[in-house]
Length: 347
Image 1 (cartoon, rainbow, N blue to C red):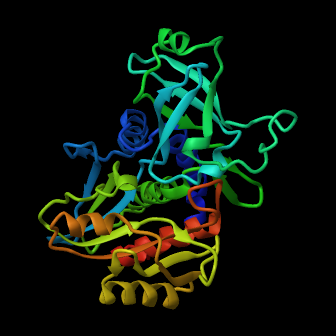
Image 2: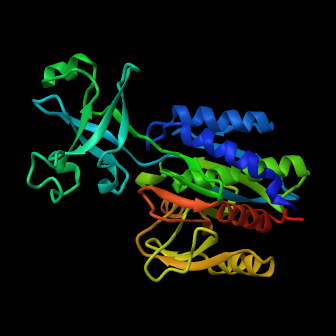
């Protein structure tokens, strides 16, 4: 099958999904974006009580189900407090690489729907003023958000309606280069979610039917650990389609689909992982098998939630995770192909 003809759809989907602000717990915008795409493709949507998005595709055999998981919640931050000078202290949502936030633009959304802009900065932001401007730690205790409004005090900020608990949205800076690189915040895991949406388009347009009933699940609480803790009872196999790691002694690159054998949650199912490796090898995919000790996925959430399931993990190789991330079209394509192969749908 020629996957490249779906490249424009994949990139259009990336732009749509990445534009929707969705730090964990704030789901309305990404729900609208994802459900809009699914509606255009003609798929009915179900929602879990906490906001997960599910699409069910009947298989040749509906006696058991495979779940393909990707999460559309992202890293972010919330207002923690307001300083006497009218600056914001923040608390992170998830675990972004905080030093990469220094100088990053953001949007501040209040509970009553107002939006303001601001900038994450070191509390010693000026090289001409502060002797520790270059050495002060970049962390929650030593950084602030400067608001783009005329404020001089805590009271001025409060008059804008800004309060603790308001979300701070990072600019994703999504860019697709002529050389095929996708660089953006939140490729983890909106890149994989876009791959699953592209698989759904391929199934529809090519008239393909998976081997088993397949539930595509877009979770919204993965970054805090419980995204896929609930799955329907008929699900027996779970695959998290999530980013592959690059660096240290790992073999994955941005051009590969990563197959994870073990992460901080323990080993993935040996049989499922072996089947993924076999399919990738026999079909000439660029792939890597790696161990990720500082990582866990929605499979772990499904197991901890009591699911009677076995699980595996694969996804595109992503450089600089939880910071200014980057992958390549080849890694995304190999991910789509491996998903179709595992479903028995790559003709």
